[in-house]
Image 1 (cartoon, helix red, strand yellow):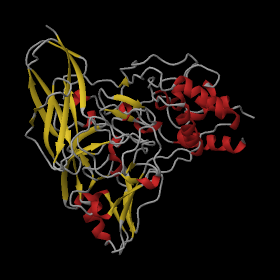
Image 2 (cartoon, chains in turn yellow, purple; image 1 turned 90 degrees about the horizontal axis):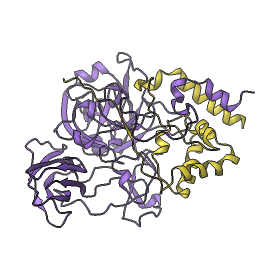
Image 3 (cartoon, rainbow over the protein chains, first blue to last red; image 1 turned 45 degrees about the horizontal axis):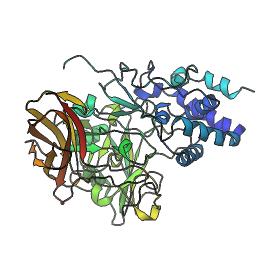
Image 4 (cartoon, one colour; image 1 turned 120 degrees about the vertical axis):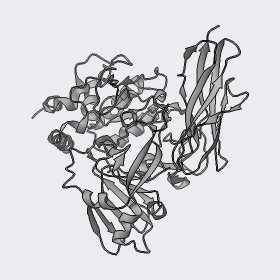
Length: 115
Length: 388
């Protein structure tokens, strides 16, 4: 448990020490949120340290595929308590399973100034 | 002890924009006014890390303007790099390790290559069954002018030993957590090819940060992952680099397998050249048109090979007619193509484009499925609704 918190903290220190994600808009409000549910906060805590929710919400995967993805993310530093593993997989499978409607991405602003 | 939730709240607000509130999943297709510096009207596949896709409608020019060029990052772009202090080190299986400044590289003989760069995963969202990863549509591809010294000339300054087989390229990507760094290698033959660059410029201007400032590799005709951004080290190795993004990442099955079935790493090979592909740029999918002559336009490319022809079908692939290829061409650049179409009848028409290359390859009807969704190059299809 404490080792995982150290990993999460170290990542956060590194990220907060560097300028805002290097050119990405600090005022952006376009990141999708994770859906409500018992695992929403834990999923946010584990996953959104390293990347935004958009990477998650665009996926449409089977449960078996979500197991693989969660395991890969844990290996790469995502802090997931063992007892949360299966509920997290279930949460992701239900909300971003193969039968969910297709994700519709956002577009960035178009520059209306003619060059 | 601070709870996990309190700890998360204490971090940079910018880092946790996605955590605001508990209002549930936001409605789709929102937020079309977010300003991303240097980019215009791009499809946002991810904000952090930054992954931006080019709408196909922007593929109506031979050169893709930099504000419309797709961006692919596995990790965080590096913070402001001081060009005066930046350097490129060359070492490994070389006679004499060498370090270059940006000024050194700028003084070397410069070479320009017009290159169509495509993400290996372009089209991934179109694979069936679905696979994990950035769910690119059709637009992780663009064509740009890259300029800089030849990588061959850079390596020759250090003197490549005969034992050198691969060239590892390392960039200044900021790596989160325990994620393996994005390091790959290319075969020595590609590294020494006359058109492989240490690119300093893109479309006549210094590389932007999104595209690898101050220097990146340009491995023309190959998957974008072979063109390392924010280059800082080049190391000649006596074998292929061993790392996540050489294996299991960026590998393609030796033989087509059954969709949905896993593939053993030993049955794959590292990805190199792009394959033959075409896209319809205009009219847009699901457009409503009047029954009059319409120009169907698009682009076609073939990696290491050349595009020989593009055929268009206006009846869903039953019959095909030759499209006209555009005049502008360069070895690794896409060809524009066009076809004048006068719909014979109103209703819904399925328009298809199919490219054939100098190696005799042509786009397939069905994707060669693979677990990572790489190299999707199925015949492009759109639907057009013609009014009476």
